[in-house]
Amino acid sequence: MEILVCVKRVPDTAENEIEVNSDGTDIDRDDLVYSVNEWDNYAVEEAIQIRDNVGGNVTVVSVGDEESEEVIRREMAMGADQGVLLSDDAFNDSDGKGIASILKAEIEKGKYDLIMTGAQADDGAGQVGGMLAAMLDLPYASLVNTIDITDDKKIKVGREVEGGNIEMNEIELPCVLSIQTGINEPRYVGIRGIRKVASVEIPVHGTSDLGLASDAVGEAGANVKKVDYFVPDTGEGAEILEGSTEEIIDKLVEYLKAKGGVK
Amino acid sequence: MAQIYAYIVHKGGVADDTAIELITAAKKIDPDASVSAIVTGSGADLEAVCKDVASTYNEVIKIDNAAITYPNAEIIRGILVNILPGDAVLLLPHDTFGMDLGPGLSIKLESAFVADVVDFEGLDGSNLKIVRQEFSGQVSTHMLCDIGSGAVVNIRPGAFTPDESKSASGEIVDKSSEAGDLAARRTFLETVVAEVGDVDITKSEVLVSIGRGIEDEDNIEIANDLAEALGADVSCSRPIVDSKWLEKSRQVGTSGQTVKPKVYLACGISGSFQHLGGIKGSPFMVAVNKNIKAPIFQVADVGIVEDILEFLPELTEKINDM
Picture (spheres, chains in turn brown, orange):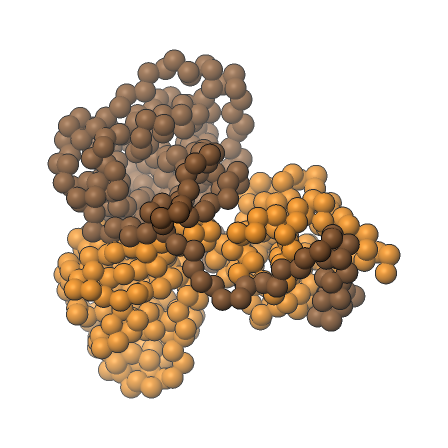
């Protein structure tokens, strides 16, 4: 099975506090620790497991600047067979549709049975997988947390729906799936694994390689544009308990007693 | 202003809570907009929902077909492409159905798409100013969306006040004959209902709920100790279940359990909207988190800026000494 997984390099929210920069044009990107988007990492693990079970190839592709090469390399250290970086200044400030258009152009250069994205990334939109499927005119399932390869024509997928229930579907191949976290346990990538792929060449494709018009992507092609970042005025918020830990605990215990939190 | 449409999610003959939130969202885009509801499904359940929704919307478009008794996003996408005008603004709830349908539908309609919208700040010509959040609610953004050639806008459940006025007496318009081709390459098989675990957290009065801040599986003992001292149960947020440290039945959130305790201690939980969506009944909420910027502090009653790994054992000790 030929599998392609779309990955994104994002600030790691487990390692950083995300703050708005001084003029509100962006988040403060100084000293941020970046990593592969968590959802995408589950998707790559799933692709590797499917390949190991039924044979085939896993390609990892990312739209981003040259730094995105490090996440492609990381996913190759995990077990992906090859990586492609889609990078061009003309891609800057693309909206979801722009990103999907770039990915579509790369995907059409090959032949894939299964295309996967993470269910969402840092902006929480969860839009690229569904757009890509519609552009390629392939069937799509979002929020996938189980995959069962039936044969080379169709697969069974479970979608995580409300209440922790799983909606089982049969879907024809080729198809696009957006992968939910928890579908598997992504393997650990050690420094030795990274070293092994350190010198593997990762091709970089831009607008001309992909046959894209530069006004179809980037800011020029976007009908959704980001104006600014801000911290919302959320009213009062929580009463923050202050003092020594002992004093805080005393205050908290009083609250818990009053509210029925201590039996 | 183009016509605004609201897609009504329903189950078992009952409209979802978002049905009466989407109309508030539509009126926030344009107070004078004409807003139509779209309800798809089949049989008596569909009739019941249409009737209910007609008390909120002036026009209810009904699509009745046995093929969409279960809402298959691929089939419904085709129907919506057939019945909506090219410049339609369609509102969907940003739930597991809206996330499945919205992005692809926008491509087929050649419309703009915006996900998980929490507010609107006015329409200037064809530019709609939108408020979203990024990084699980740690920062907000303003977006400008050109709705001139139509738009699909996914609205966060719970973000807009429900319109409970029931002030409309809407007309139900049957457009089933315009649905078109109902073939799909994805087929719904069945819903596998989540297993009930050893503890039913939906019945717990006090919950000690843990998130990423617990850092390691071995540290869950800290939460268990506190829960035991308080006579509480342990619940968690999604990353704990993803790591397989606790069972799915312990997860609070839209993709887990909906809980309604008296007291909720959110320990090392940042407070994403998906997590908060699983907490009902306005419990007294205590948030313990070392990151003062965590969104949980905006919704908690009491906040404590400490590392849970140090704070919780001390709290447990104090309670055991009482």
